[in-house]
Image 1 (tube, helix red, strand yellow):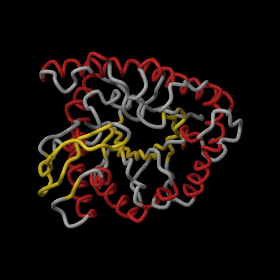
Image 2 (tube, rainbow, N blue to C red):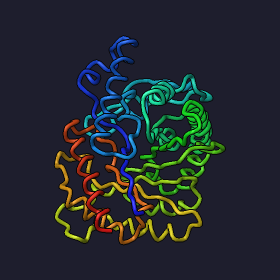
Image 3 (cartoon, one colour):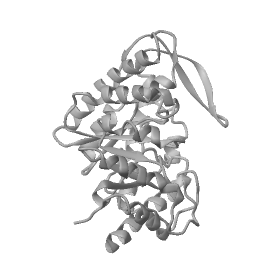
Length: 335
């Protein structure tokens, strides 16, 4: 039977009662509101029809870098840096050997184990991105620092798997910096592989968003210990493109590389743009899926937004997800 899973891929807009005062609440109140927001978001995902509920939209963390970095020994924060536009984050500086002070995902995974039935995917900021986004005042070079982060992340994933138990746990390594330095693709490969090395009972995902050259990533696919590649496509695609989807041309390249591998990889296909309030009609998403099915078998595809939906309202985010599921259902009737 042909089937295409739909999945949540990252962050989702927090309810106002959580986002306002997120960093100022007393610990007990924060945990209460975070759990409430997680359950409400999981219910929203279920109503949208998603097969994979992610981790409830990342209600426990504000952003992807400082959340883990602040829980690692050997990192000091000097103050905020500007990332783009007028957005700032606290960039850490590595000043000594790094190791975990505490887990950064255990609390929410433990909560989800008690509260949720179904598939769960935990997004973890990858070692290469943690290295690239940190100042380095201690390690010999970028490679040594990236591999140090790999060891820390490996320990984190082992703990999460232990909490989750016998069921398969999906681990999504988020590497937005993966193709930023084309000469370092071997380091991307090595550091990601080390972060998941020796851990059984997990399905491994890699999320790389807004790369200008996915060919760099495809070139190391065969040596990566990754089962599912969750990638962005809708942001590149014109809404009036007809049946020929220029923004999805890399799907063919992924499929061609996949054919050379003894173990086939799955493609998480970004079908809705997270940077626009425009809610893509079901028919448009259908065209994007059908175009991709020219090159990929249904069981080698999953559908997701390009990235996390935290920049959209909860209402728009829900409608984008619901339309994605409806488009999938319509496609299944035709194949």
